[in-house]
Length: 205
Ligand code: HEC
Ligand code: HEC
Image 1 (cartoon, rainbow, N blue to C red):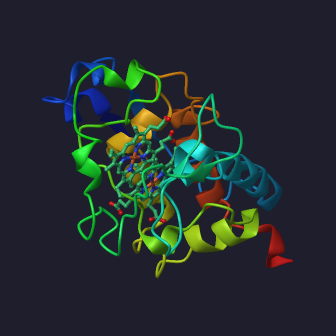
Image 2 (cartoon, helix red, strand yellow):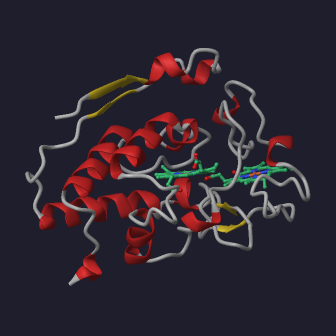
């Protein structure tokens, strides 16, 4: 059995104080063969609750390159204000870069309507990882497809979830924003269970 304990706090040296609490995500997949297809699909359903949540899907948008806004004072998600378009660079190089507003200022995530910021460049997810408005089955098939998930195994996906500071923000967004459901550790555990079950999708039949 693989057991990789990653002290997120150690990765965050030099990051602003907001992250000082740190998280300690443990990547410990269940034993080979110990997760049934049904359990894998149940884990997937929880993964979908996370990936379709605005704290994730607002950045995981399609080829129109338009990030989405949603928060306590918005009902449905709506296109980012101020005509922001991330361009094909997904970071706004063609227009205004995301970092113009989403730059690092420790603590400001607690201010409602301030631009969220993390200790890495703010940008849209790759267009292949389009989740906004996509069905459970569409996202399931994307996340298990090496051509569209950054050529990652489920173990790589779990490790990515811990390394990415944006994700630590999504579970601790501040400013009255609703955090992503479950916790980062529970989400990692679900990705591992889904992986050990063979990454099933409901449409597999
Ligand atoms: C600020 C925008 C942003 C938000 C919010 C965001 N992501 Fe991402 N996501 C990215 C970027 C950028 C990448 C590409 C990073 C890379 O490949 O190293 C990415 C890649 C990923 C990947 C890699 C697999 C793939 O298909 O590309 C996963 C898994 C992922 N994000 C999960 C999440 C989850 C879960 C949430 C919410 C809890 C979330 N993301 C919220 C920007 C975001
Ligand atoms: C002119 C300033 C500005 C620029 C440039 C900008 N943003 Fe924003 N962004 C904001 C502000 C302000 C908010 C908070 C809006 C609110 O909560 O009412 C925000 C919120 C967001 C959110 C919603 C976060 C959430 O889940 O609540 C996403 C996603 C986002 N921006 C992505 C981007 C991306 C990607 C770029 C670059 C292409 C970008 N922004 C460029 C000011 C900016």
